[in-house]
Amino acid sequence: MKTVEFLKGPRFNQRANDHYVMMEEDFLLVDYASEDWIEQLQHYVARHKQEQVGRLQELMRYFKGDNNIKYRAAKTDDTEADNRISSDFAKYITIFEQGYMLGNPVEYKNDDGQLQDLIKDFSKRNNEKRHNISLKKDLCVYGRAYELLTVTKTGSVVWVKLYKLSPEQTFVIYDDSYERHSLMGVNYYELDYGQSKRKTVIKVYTVDKIYTYDWLSTQGDKMALREVEDHFFNGVPINEYANNEERLGSYESVLDNIDAYDLSQSELANFQQNSNEAILLIKGNAYTGADEEDFLADGRINPNGRLGISLAYKRAKMLILDDNPNQDGVEPDASYLVKSYDSQGAEAYKQRLVNDILRFTFTPDTLDSNFAGVQSGESMKYKMMASDNYREQQEDLFEAGLMRRLRLAVNIWSIKGTEATNYEQINETSVVFTPNKPQNQSELATTVKNLYGIVSDQTVFELLSLVTGVDALAEMNRLKQEKGDEDKGGEPSSRFGEVIAHDQEETSPS
Image 1 (cartoon, rainbow, N blue to C red):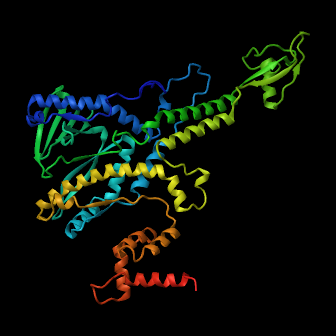
Image 2 (cartoon, rainbow, N blue to C red; image 1 turned 180 degrees about the horizontal axis):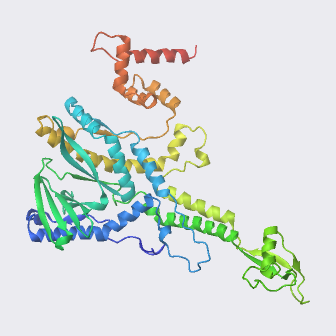
Image 3 (cartoon, rainbow, N blue to C red; image 1 turned 135 degrees about the vertical axis):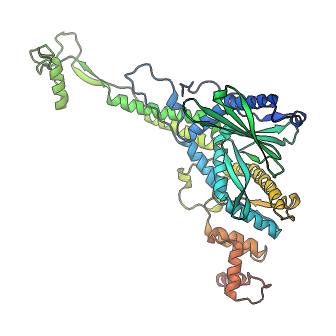
């Protein structure tokens, strides 16, 4: 990578985060095998590479700790230390958001039992928790994430499979309406066969077909349609997620602060190194003996010369100085030439940068002394309020992507024979996010006791699952089995009521 303009000027292309839009009437006239469309598709891919990929790659570099400090211009004085220390704020912020929002898996609830079972099987087969966390990583890094839905077969079972696509190789083209419906999704990648033989594969996904194009380097700019396949999702099977309305990465707005912190750390390391290699200043004459020649005739250092005596002083960790023969000369002295360092001011400056980075990304500072010790639930709420507000906004956008995922999947489930599944029923699905944060189990248990008899038993057990880690329905069934209730239609949570009542009697004043 070439040298960057460090902390200077705009960082990205002004169109680096634009959506691609096509008029619907133009879209309806597209002939996917025509030269005109192939030329236009090449233009879309070229724009994505030239205008957007640079930003995406830089954001990923920061996630990997390969910050711009590594690429700033070298110092003109090659005798000066030039350390390049990059901080890992980008990964810290990303991992915090991943765990906080999706550390507990997303839950789906639908009153239709058959549809609920389909959703559960769909999540299990795709290891949805891992997949969603991977999408969240891309959201934090790039500000956008993409997944592809396909239909696969395992034995005799046909099911919908999820794949994550790289934002550096994927984009969606939307119509020009206010709803911004997706018209097609584009995914491209390069295959390098060596000896300058490369091929770019471009796949275009529309609402009902998949068009595959080959772009061979050996044929110049010639690109041709190779294959057309049908799919039955009744919608573009590339699903786009947004981290926020502007599609900004979670640490993108504080890249300058991160660069300033890296520069401060690097210059401190330079100061330490330069201090260790500081120039020795001698005022007066060092006692050097009678011989003034530094080297002997055979090239060896003269032990009685100035250089030899100076090296002997260094080995002995001592220095003897004579008075300057000039009566008006300086008094004999020796010292190192080093810059002064305001350690207190430098540390305050770095701490201010750290505070700004975490504050502007809504990331709590867990090293803050105010986080130490046992905290009440209410005090933690205030400390996490900014993070919670930001997380809820992100959850709304993520939920929109999850619901579109389910609406695409339900079309395949209908084709498989589950005719009861449709958009109306899938739209009744509730998506439940449970933030992954420390719980005061004592306070939570007290809350559960207070809510018993006011809300449904299932709601009580769902709250209690945050303490026990056991699913609410599973726990209710365990109690039912323990009680040995032969009446399957009876209340499975009655034993829980007895336990709560007994506990309240013991703690009530006599």
